[in-house]
Length: 354
Ligand code: CP3
Image (cartoon, rainbow, N blue to C red; front, side, top):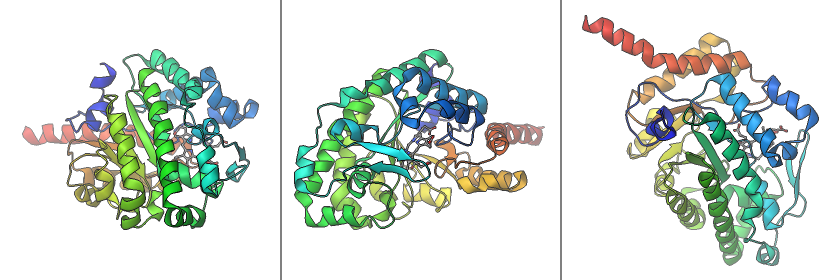
């Protein structure tokens, strides 16, 4: 089976599949002993910048879980560095950008001509794609312009996005220049991942749900659409993911993404309906459910599958990334359960026919 014939890629294209494909955001991460073992000797950025290590971490997680796609191990913030913003990951606090963007001048100084310095990610994609050959598709990814801009302006994670929104409202020309530069860098960076063998791309707009639909349309949709349209030109399916997006789904659909990622705050069938079933959907089990007993996890997973109702174009995933401390055995059992679910209903169907 070639990557383009895989369950995952067919589901991205809303084609019928024999079983619901599943992969999990942050499937390689601290909840997994194998990842923690690598992290004892290397920082997060060292792993990202060493293609052999990034490939190893990607492959180990995908093989251990038996998922239907391998997402390349990298981080959303890597493009900041080539644009001229240095950052670090501090233990327990997440990313910290040393000199956040707070003025039009600092935006004017950003470089947008060095995406090729991120070629180590492409190299890691190449190694993973070589390893899996036709067996498993590799997902490349990048951040969406809004979510990356929010990190650049806030200097890290944020609760209210005050600096970001202030820039958006009071310096619209500078805001637009920032979004335009991000699209330039991200489109080149993600397209390189496809050249290296990525069979699909996910655009992470993790924090876009802090915006009203009007603001999303005015300040974010045009550039995000431009990015997604450029990426569709590479020929691979594009997944566009955000959290807290129940009121934004219609506008997000206008980007032309092949797949929209849903978080758990909206029931999957309601979310899909808001998209007029006009694209595939990915999601949407609450990642915290995985901390419960297996019976609860199983019932919640079954609920997601029932809401998808066998309609072509569902990719099972969590509504956001796996959290550290998540019990690995529940994650593995979830993957097996999703794979067997169609098996069970097919069996039930056969029994019914007799
Ligand atoms: O999904 C995968 O398995 C691929 C790897 C991956 C990482 N980051 C590695 C990572 C992916 C897809 C990302 C994307 C990413 N990075 C996002 C978007 C996804 C989301 O969660 O919304 C964001 C917002 C970031 C920025 C980022 N990186 C933060 C906020 C943090 C700190 C929070 C935390 O979990 O500690 C990171 C660190 C990070 N990136 C880790 C991993 C596995 C965890 C820490 C580590 O090993 O130190």
